[in-house]
Structures are given as structure tokens and as C-alpha cells.
Image (cartoon, rainbow, N blue to C red):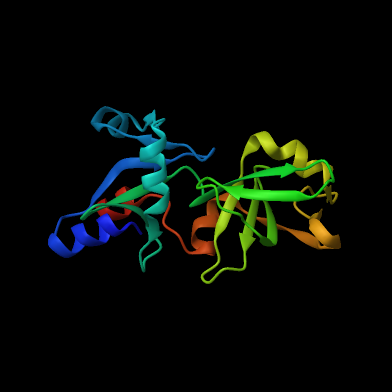
Length: 192
């Protein structure tokens, strides 16, 4: 967390949080959601300002209930998730070594791989608590070059670096948030 954010929290500790105004979409884009976008269930406008994106990424965290937020100075802005709290890109270099990078630009080292009933690929890392990330759909071809699917399309294996083979495990998309302990819509949770 940025020092300026810590200072703002110390100076104004009781600023109310907000929900519904910020979204992380299925492709790792941060989106601002005005009242019209929220009312219409729209994703909102993509944020393109590099400094603002960096600020959001550095101050992105989860609370004890599994609700992800951006700490904007003294105000906690809860994030609506297009799918998971993290979105990763998969690439292969000229030697064939694979790399996973999250939407904040950080490395993501997988310890498990899941395929959902919609064909989405999820990676889980070994951090504590573990992070779950959906693979950006533009990288499914790279994934398929290093995976072998079973007959049911929800099993098989993924060949990671250094000969590591991770089994593909099936998961139902509508059970992902509960299984991995996050809240995909803090706005809906607040109104319930």
C-alpha cells in the first residue's frame, strides 16, 4: 500500500466505503461504473490512465470477508469482479518457457489448474492465502499448446516449466467464488 494512502487512513479513519463504482472485468481491465452503468448492469468505462492504473494495482487488496477493494486514500472502494480477483496472461518465450503475469504486472506461479464448465481456465498459486486467477481468453491458444484435455473437457493436464505437470481439475463456474473464498459482487452482498 502506498505511503500516501496509509497517511490518509491515519488522518481520516472513518470515511465510508463505497460499492458498485469500480469493476475488474473478465479481461483484467479496470472500469469506472457511473450510476447509469450500475443501474443498467453495464461494465462501465475502461480506465486507460497509466498512473491511475498503477495506483489502483498497488492499493488492491481483500478484506476478511473475501471482498476485494481499492484503497483510494481514506476511502475503501469495493470492486465488482467480472469473474475472479485476478486475471492472468500466459506467454511463451523463444525457448518455450512459460510465464503467467497478473493484471497488476506481477508474476503468477501456478500450483493448480482448473477448467470450468464454460471452458474457462483458472490458475491458483501457492501464496497464503492462495490467489485464484482466470486466464485471459486471448491466451487460450498458448494454453492449449501446453495442455492435454481429457474426454470430458474438464480434466487432463497442463505442462508448466521445468517438467512440472499440473492436473486439470473440473469446477463449476457458479461455484468458483464460494470455493475460492471471494465475493464477486460486494454491491449485491451489501444490499442483501
